Figure: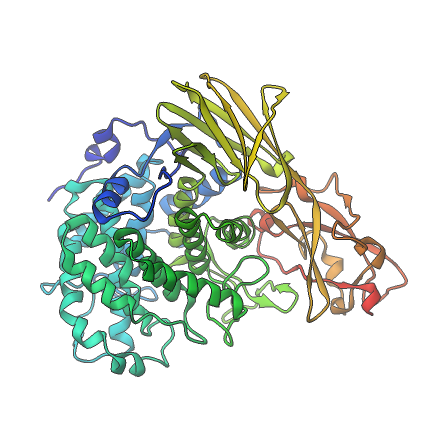
Length: 614
């Protein structure tokens, strides 16, 4: 088989490919989807539009480009042929090659999902895919030849990597069916079917209960790939296997959260394919347990390991939690899931992105996040071996959920860049939320009839105002939405203004407070406010007079140093009494934790003690 860039999916579809594009998943309001209709929707999932030659159209377009450029041409380490192939050979020379197919599968999945946005991404895939396919073993698996009769950590690591590679191959097939990826994916699926009688047992689970990253979740996370394989092939045996594994998914103390959340995402796929309510119940119960057991942190992070072992965050887990809640919002329209998705998106997922474009780990601290700059074992890490690729894979899913087309109009759900269409009417969103709390929707094509535009009012906004040109419009309120109906013309500009305020959240047990402005969690960092971290900074206190209401009286900060990904709409001066010299009041810069992407990793404090509790 010979793949070349000339056989790109863009050429097949006749669509111009550029990084400066935005796209969104369009699924009309509907009951759970049967497998056949869901497959047809998946086939039409990408909707693309050129962003009028602009270098970017908002914070998340810039963040996407930062990580995409890092994966395609950045480093260290660069994603070279040797680095990517090392786990399917497997070969020494880099860590985690025992997770056979993990890096290579994530790399395929991430770049194939971006092929509508970058010609270079597809060129990378076509150049390396034949080499990856050539490494498949006769029995269908990739990696070391391990005895399937011996269920242990190394065997489970191999299973994990093959599961990620299965997903990557299916994404390549979705983009370009003639790639040969489906045949390799089917052979992995057949291998999983052959070993299923040994894996779907309590004995296997109990034997692996002391493992972490190579535990039983290395088996259960295959639900996602098997469900996708059933859709792609029409073969029900893969669906039956995925359903049998779903019955074995459990949340355990100290469990690897990435593996568990990946399993839940696969079970939600089963619900969308079959319409069986038990699968939705499993997923919603799992999400409730994460929250109720204290595994969802203030910044929208789920720790790498569930309590009692939570020590740091993980970019893969944050991407999974974000994608899971976006999917649940789309399926259920329960605002709780939209709220969870936004808190993670604007805070933890943003903060998790390094200035290099990588995603990874940050060390948890009782008052926020530690710098972790202490060498081996410190915990802060650019996890190029998993999180960077999984983070990149998540960003297209964000764009796909910005709009949705329903029977009663076009719905704008999340205030970030995106593209939406309802019939022949199409709209492009360019977010300026970070600068002035607004988003501009530009009509790209005219509506053929009168259409409703519905804008979701987030929980963090006091009000939403809609303007066409310079004229504020009278809007209709319906539940979470503000709506406007008219016959839209090509070139119409709709400006959405989100009325945001600064607010506090109280942690009742400790009496600590945290500050938010709009969707952003605010903190003090050692980069901009090093003196706030003078010993003993744990005794720093916030003046009681600014805390007399839910809307604290903080002065907006102006003239502060501008950095990449700064958010001037949410910067304030925070007065405080230093723990070591409280007779001399000081001020620190209180700014969104999302700004962390703009500079080298720093410690952040976002839990504060009020002075009246001294």
